[in-house]
Image (cartoon, rainbow over all chains, first blue to last red; front, side, top):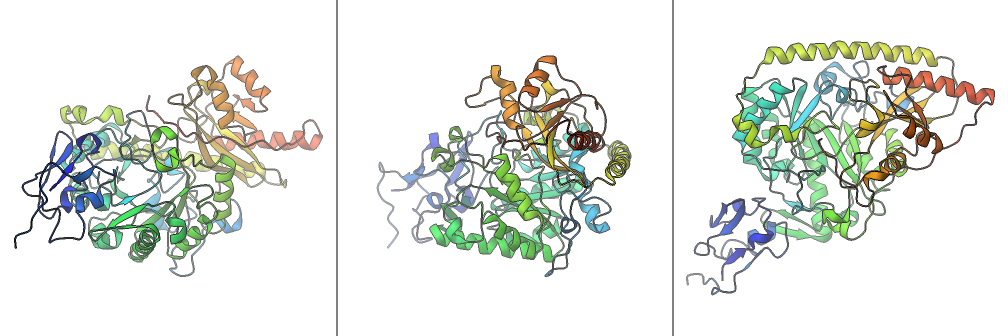
Amino acid sequence: MPLKIIASQCTGCSACEPECPNVAIYEKGGVFFINPKKCTECIGHFDAPQCTAVCPVDNTCVLDKSLPRYQPAA
Amino acid sequence: MQQTGGNTGCATSGSSGKASCGSGAGANDLPPEIWAKVKNHPCYSEEAHHHYARMHVAVAPACNIQCNYCNRKYDCANESRPGVVSEKLTPEQAAKKVLAVASAIPQMTVLGIAGPGDPLANPEKTFRTFELISKAAPDIKLCLSTNGLALPDHVDTIAKYKVDHVTITINMVDADIGRHIYPWIFWKHKRYTGREAAQLLTERQLLGLEMLTKRGILCKVNSVMIPGINDRHLVEVNRAVKSRGAFLHNIMPLISAPEHGTVFGLGGQRGPTAQELKALQDGCAGEMNMMRHCRQCRADAVGLLGEDRSAEFSTDKVMAMEVQYDADTRRAYQERIEGDRVALAAARQDELAALAGENSDIKVLVAVATKGSGLINEHFGHAKEFQVYELSASGAKFVGHRRVDLYCQGGYGEEDSLGTIVRAINDCHAVFVAKIGGCPKAELHQAGIDPVDRYAGEFIGKAAVQWFRRYLTRVRSGEIQHQARGDADIRQGAFIAA
C-alpha cells in the first residue's frame, strides 16, 4: 500500500519532494504526486514515511488503501 | 527622532563585545562598520526605512516546522502577512525579478528571502538565488529570515555568499512555553512533537545565533507576541538573544484572524493591543534596542516598508520585461537620498534645540500621515497607515505605525472607515496630515484627537516638537489639561497594495 497525496489539500510547498528516499514524488500543475510504483512507504529507510512527517497539512500524505501494502523483498 | 534615555543608546553587550544599537540608532551612534551595514537596510534601521526599499523573492516554499500562527493553505493576493505569496519563483525567475525591480525602484537596496516557508529548508533554491543575484547586482544586500532549526548547518554557506543580515524568529527559550506555539518540527528525518520539539528548536536557534554573531553577521531576532502564552516570557527571550550578540529585537503582534485558518485564529487566541505591545517593547528597550517599524510583510513584498508594489512585478510581467541593470543610475539616485538624509539630520538638530530647557514628564503619542522621506506629506483620507511618534522633553521618537486601509476589515464596513481610523490611533493626542477635509476634522476633534494640517510638507520631528512645545505651554498656562488617551487597535486584517 504505497502513499498518495490528496491533491485538493496539497499546498504545493514541495517539502516532501526532497525527503523521499525513493525519488517517487513529482510535481504536476502546482501540486505533488507520488508514483506508487516507486513508493516503499519508507520501509527499510526510515521509521515513518517522510512525506507524512514533513507535510504541513494533516491527513494529506496518506496510505492509498486501494493498493496492497508494500512488501519488502525477502 | 533621537534615542531617548541613556540606556537605549549605543550599549555594548558584555559577552561578545558587539554593539547592540538598534533600529533608531543613526550614523553618530554606531561603529562605522555597523552603520555601513545598516544605513540603507530598511528593516535594520528605522531611519533608513523612510528612504530605502526592500524586496522578497518567494523561492522557498517548504518549511520544516509548524507554527500555530501559520496556515500554509490560506493564500490571498490581497493579503499581507508573513508566509503569504501570490506565486512561487525559480531562482532564475527570482534573479530576473530582482534586476527588474532594481531598475524600476532605484532605492531598492535589499533582497531578502523569507519563505513563504523557511529559506534554509530549501537551501539549494535559496543559495542558488543568492549566487545569481550577487553576480548580476553586487550592490544589492542579501538577507534571509529563518526559524533557525536548520541554521547551524548553513552558517558557512551564509558567510560564503556574504549574506550579512539574518533574521531568526525566536518566540521562546523555554520548551514548556514553546510547546504551545509549535505543534511539531521535522528534523533529521523525524517528526518531533510537544516539549521535545520545542527543546530541539530553541537549542538550534540559540546555537545558530551564536555562530552567526561570532562571524560578525548581523542578526535580528523576530518574536511574535502571543498574549497569555509568551508575552511575559519575551523579556527573557530578549535577554537571551542580547547576550548572544543579536543586533536588534523585533517584537511583533500576533496576527490571528479566524479567516486565516490558523490554530490560534480558529481557537480564538487574541493578538495584543497597541498599548500592550508598546509596554512590552518599552520594557525590553532598556536591555537592547527594539525594532518598531516592522510591517509584517509578505514573503514576496516589493517596495518601501508600508507599501507593496508586488503586483507590478508578477512573473508574467517580469518575464516580458527588457531589463537593463544600470548601476550608475541607481548610485546617482541613492546619492540624492543621502542628501535628503543630511537635511533630515539638520532638522533633527533644530528639533533638539527647540526643546532645550523643557523639563516636563509629559509624554504624548501623535500619528503622522506620510509617504516617506521623513515628511508630513500625505492626505488624511489617502493614508493607508499612520506612523506613531512619542513626544517628550527629549524629542520625538518613532514608536510604531498603525494600518488603517479599508480592505478585508472583518466586520467594519467602508462607511465606518473614520471609526476604524479613530480606533487605530485612539492612543494619540494629535494626527499630523498634509491635508484633511472639514468632516473628518470635526469628528477627530470629537474623539479627542487634534487634527493638525499646518505643517504640511515639513519634517515630522521638527513639526511635532513645535506642536509639542505649544501643547506644554498651553498645559502650563492652564488653557488645557493634559489627559491620558485610551488604548488602540492593532489591525488584524490585510494590507493591500493599491
